[in-house]
Image (tube, rainbow, N blue to C red; front, side, top):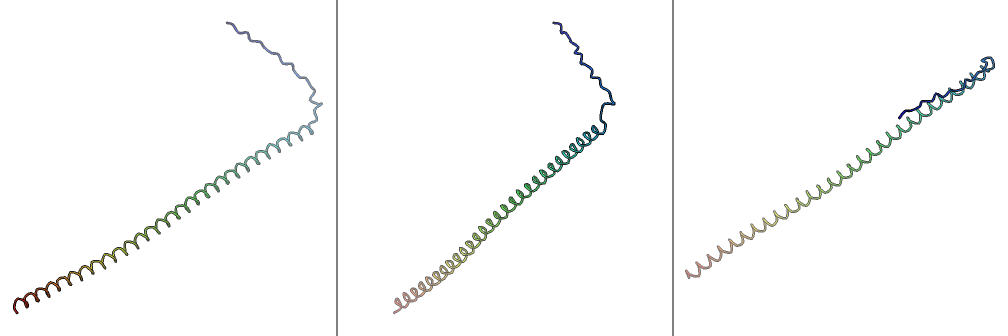
Length: 125
């Protein structure tokens, strides 16, 4: 398979350079250049604005995360304090029961001694 390459001949444009209004052309070039510079500056400003928005958004997200963490820590601390209070109350209750048991044992021992004394006095009489 053979490809044919066709050479396209472009017509040459012939003009007289004296016919060109150089001032008008320079004004248009200057205007286009200024417009391009303005567009570039606008793009740079837009990029800067977008970056700033992204930075602020990240800061806001980080702040929200930190606030959520702080709330969670406060909640956990409150639960821990509640558990510590419950533990203290249970310990006080346990000590009160222990004290009552000791008093009851003393009463039982005293009652047993009194019973023994009554038995001895009954057998002796």
